[in-house]
Structure formats: C-alpha cells, structure tokens
Length: 271
Figure 1 (cartoon, rainbow, N blue to C red):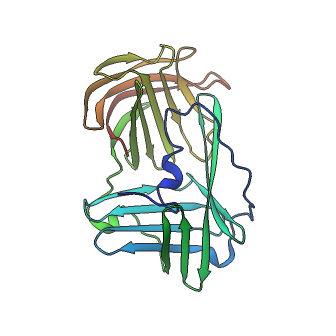
Figure 2: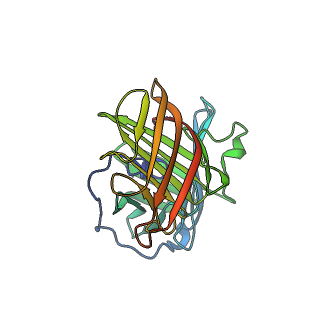
C-alpha cells in the first residue's frame, strides 16, 4: 500500500539508517501548530482497501495510523515522533531525531483546502478528501493488530522492553539497518553488510543507538568504533525481511554513562 503525504510518507523517508546528510526545510510558515479549525482527527477511507487517520493536536503534536484493509496490516506513529504546523495554503509535518551525532530534521508540506468538516489534500499523486471524526484510533481498532513491519525486543539494564510499535528495515547498498520504536523509546541498529553473520558495533561504519525518550533525541547512548561494544547477528535475510539477535553496551557521550542491552531479537521488513 502506498502511503500518502498526511500519513506514513511524511516520515518513512526520514526514518532510514542510510542517511548521509541533514535535511532542513525552512520554507514553511510555522504558525505554532494550533491550526485553528484544522485541529482535530481526520480520516481518509478507500472502502475495503485502505484507511488513514491523522490527529492534528492543538499543541502541535502529530499522530497517524494507516491500515491496509486488503492485507490486514497497520502502521502507527506514537506520541512525540512528529509535530505539525500550517499556513494559509499548506500543512507541514516535521520530524527531528539524532543519528550518528547529528540532528536530522525534515519538514514536508502538503497543500490543503478546508470546507467545514472536510479537508482536501493535494500533492503530486492527486487529491484526497479527509473527513473529521470524533476521536483518534489505534491499530487495535482494526482487530488485526499492528503490523509495524516486524518485532524487536530486548532487556535494557535488566528490564524487558518491547520496541514493536514501529519497526522497519533498510536493506540497500551493502547496508543492513533496523529502526524500532516502543512508546517513546527508540533503537537504531546499523551494520555494513548484506549477508548472514555476526557484525561488531566496534567496526567503523557499524553502530547501535538507544534513545530513551524520542521527545529528547539529544539524550542518546551509542555503541560504535569510538565507544561502547556489542554485536548484531543476522540469522536470515529473505524477501526484504531480516531477522537475528543483538546485544551491546552503549555510552552517552555527555557524561560517559552507559546502558546495557542484552537478549535482543529482531525481525524487520522493508516498508
């Protein structure tokens, strides 16, 4: 299913472990995200095919759920992952996070026309009409659960944690990457390779990142060639899906505090 500008496409292009430059779009007119009558919950439905639901909160927070009704899969982004704003012509969604010591920001704008409880969004793929509904939903609403692109779990300093709210893999150009989100917490794993085997995070080009709180992306722990240690073991790569195990000790550069990740398992698919 192809995600549109008010849904997963806003974010999927940015949340990739093969980033090599910082994107920052300063062309938008940020009105603080209040958006007037734009605030609320909006839903697009193609009967029996797909459904997209987005919440534009008055405080500027942006949430989105996208359901593929044909394949019975669902993606959703959690609180703190994105913000929105608008001007007279366009709605803008912004996401910002820390990766490999750099802060990445992307703002994407989509033209809109508001008519009471209906809103038409227009981009290069055409126009879609979203209707206002009373309350936000989540993937549980559909009864087929959240197909976030995989499942990731591990133990963080002795506490079992699940990172399966949103998972995707990057398998491209000799790179294996996994991004996984659980609530407001995030894991990013990247190794240079394209086959099964074990990869050390201490090798240049390989890295594990643990972000305790997505709303504070500068507070992160890293294992790479300069600090920390650990391994990612790839057990299988097939048809765009990678699975395996991982463990690492990561360091926060600001104060040299550490976090220990053990018993990690992952299955992640390309989106």
